[in-house]
Image (cartoon, helix red, strand yellow):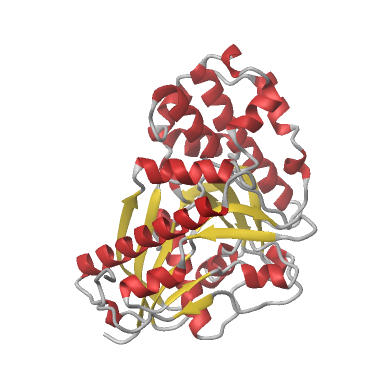
Length: 381
């Protein structure tokens, strides 16, 4: 079949593992999802990522360098495993496009920066394939926040569906894309991250399946009001945030000793925080854009209690998943980074200044070519 094959990879703020998607492109507007694979992070690697993200600036450069290499090897193995399962060779790929693992993102300081780990040159050399990475830096170089990047992809894929649609990605952090003119997009605040951290601390589970633990608790309205008083929730776009901001340490600073709460009640309250912060931003968007439906993607789309709570909170809107628009909710971001990689190779701008606040639209990503002497699908000696 004709078309360019790319693998897109994403490991997000939930820090659960690597989503990889094999995508065939006819153009930037025409693509086909061929195969997918999820590779969970080993516990030790996941712990290292969380430790670095929570202690930025207090660790040795060697800690970052070691994790940069470890993650690169994990990404390379995930890409090769997906290719093997799909029955293709690395030389059949036009490129691998990898977001990397964000450990720090500071767009609003005097010297703004963003840091994603997973050395792309190592990925290129292990896989024997062109690798595209470092997507956020070009947007920041022209005054943008460097995030969110998915709204440009959402616009390319879904704008023709309806201008009355918003795309809501609920990962560790939740972000919203409103497909109006102009397109707007921003992080609404915590998605799954606080719930994931709380259930892991109390129940030794990585996530709250279907929101069942949260559903067993009772929302503490006073605590919810305190959490919603954070200034981030009243900021206007463009704005971005991260798990380094919305952490259990933030919850404890806001509420005090967390042992005062029954654990399921705090989980219910954290879910309500996600719902209320999302609903607030949707209602604010409705002041300027007529919305009829919200299409949800990311891990939150599989949380039945969260989805039902959103429907109850926003009864006037149709709330569904992006599956209803033809793109699997679980794989949208991995597909989106494959799309950004394709745009880089075709010199197509990948940011939206109306979303990130950049001065202009620019091509995103840096290209890393494999060095000679390595066999495709094999680790270098």
